[in-house]
Image (tube, helix red, strand yellow):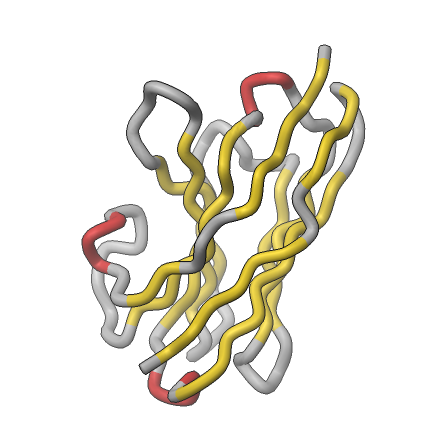
Length: 124
């Protein structure tokens, strides 16, 4: 079992930056990757970014490429999402997720564990 806890959300003006973190505990050594998803009111949960622990490959949604950076620590227990040049459309609840096996990193159903989410609000 893996427990995930997000932190670092908040309110920021458009053009600003914010970093959200996700701390994992439990059987973290067996995870293939961790990712970030977000869900805005009235919309489906969407993929934002992912990092595979083996090799360190990172993946991004087109909407955040060049603005967001995902990274993790060597212990595979914490993953970060640095968000720059934030836009009002980035406003959402951001969820951290962990997957045990290799699969399509953009699909929410391919992840086994989820955090409770942290609110990110970007004002115009």
